[in-house]
Length: 348
Image 1 (cartoon, rainbow, N blue to C red):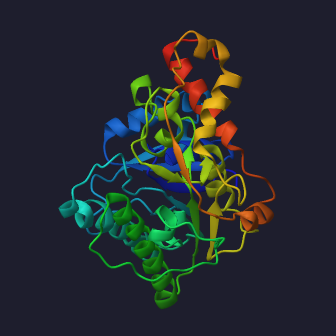
Image 2 (image 1 turned 30 degrees about the horizontal axis):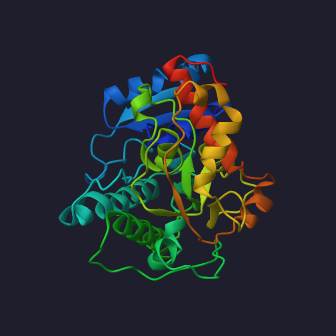
């Protein structure tokens, strides 16, 4: 393990930066594929990278366009493992219906296929870990709208979801289904020397060292928990009752490189068991853990949130990896602590 070279994509994302830090702490050497020199500088400037001082164990390769043909051909040369986290994410509404295919679905599929194809053309790679999503195995209507008694686990499969799509998140979900199916077909057809593990997070919540402006603390899925703490609303309506700490998702990605974990599997990343997350609980969590910040008004803690019941079980993931996912409370606390730190306010 020590010193083995890992190619990591998506290193400036919420999950990506935490995974990069986790891989370095575990002793791996990391080659981060970034879209620009500025992205490389952002990673190098994070407090954890500075503290670790990885030197030659952290290098960068610029891949400006993951949709370009042969985008990763040079980046994969000489690596033992690949952590593929790069994919478009949903930030509010973000995209118009005519952009769903070009901005959400095509990048997810083409980016994944580009990594797989590049890896297939080289030698010495042992495993690729891909960031998928729980929405890759849960039917859209049952995930977002219908409350059913089905307990979804990582053995669940759904068919290819054809458009048109009614919502950007539906298109995002379709991109994850289609990328998962394409990966499975690639392995069955090409029979590569390496295997693949798909990590399937729920709504990811936690601190993000790429963010240095407190105004951006509710970026992406973090807003489902944090918007209400800041006196607002995520704007997403009732959010499915599934969340996971970003540190746990990063840990799964890195520990999945261990050959003791059998390849060609999917692993869900969801906390709180079948009961799930109650997003509105953040108000009580913050009041109890940060009373002075609430009293002073730094944390308004008077916004709104709603939860839609969706039963997802990651019990098998916990059994295979041998540890429990952190609670929603720990997820909320990690974001709030970072927010207060960025404001220069004592976390109390």
